[in-house]
Image (spheres, rainbow, N blue to C red):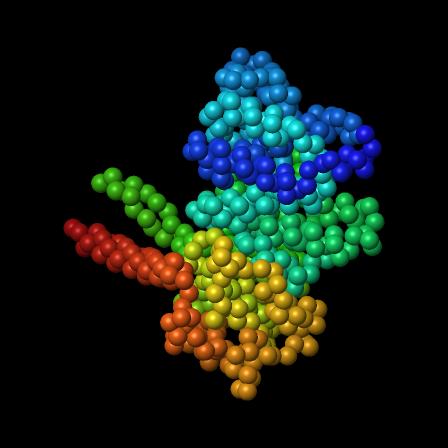
Length: 527
């Protein structure tokens, strides 16, 4: 059969994606979550693609090592070993295989770390292996096709499970808009210290290829595959999805089998960075406090705020987002650029928050703030922004001279399904941002045009604001006067719940601190 006719008969990315996703519903009836399904698919898909590499036209050595049983006897862990078995034997072998591969190094170890078999029905496991995965020749699909299929699975999983993959998934239109204004170059080194499923990094890689593919030689293309991007993700289950996403986009992270572009199982905030980068693209986790949980003498669970103390930080605080902002500053080389998704509290919180904003504007050019609309994240009630800044060399005079703010929130109402945000909703922002020509920016707001969404604030005026707050808005909110303009009830309810949770968390923290202070005084006055 000719390649042309073979291509004609091959299913499209959307057909494969639909078929793969439809099987998730079958397994959900057995209690398997969508995220767990994508995880099991990741294990099997990696093994299938490794098997394809051993056959023509690739004819590479088998990269899947053998395992050893309790008696020291070796057994195969490759794809063909799964195809030979059925029923209880297949189930037992698959579990044994995952355990053996979980202890490997490099990309293999990242993908299979702490891997478990969560498909309990051997017949459905066999069907997934034979009918769904084995029937496709995955390596014959273009990289962008494989990447699209996998990212579509991640996106659907996030949408269906807000408490699972949703918290690690940044909506694709936001990522596209951010990468479009950041315009990464082939000589950049880009890190995401809270990578989730790797969306920012795959988009940055694709952006470089799309804009520079024709001018790059073979060595330059190899370099961007191996060292353009690096991901760090604390949660092993999420790190494996990130590693597979990067792998399917052609990102290797190095020259050999031990290389991986993903640092897994280690918190970014634990230690100062050992290397600096020219770009940071990230959406750090939204949880506000880091806490250390212990069991007291009465057997009750105590929660104590875990303050991060680092020599390279401006202030010590238990606020996770504020710590990430400090960490990102330290990740940047002088001249490096960052785009960071942050919740509203990072813009207005006093104490440590004010000190961090003050230092950031002095030591960086904090030039742009994009206020994101509500209703676009998979975690409901989130109010977030993207802050853009460039690290500068030390000097006495503050580097920030003016902050440009684009308000995409006021009088904008999006939902996840009925009115989902699209890349085109960011068109005006991207045009006004003027990547590479910031000095040519012009505001759309004026006294004569009070509804203009693009406004500039001078540094001197920002200094006069209470707590140096960057929570800036000026457009008249129609919902305050017209009940018909209010967001949908579910959006309002989610926002109220978020506000109440924030208030409860703050009161709990105050109560805990007062109790601890009282106990300390009592202990000190005891004879």
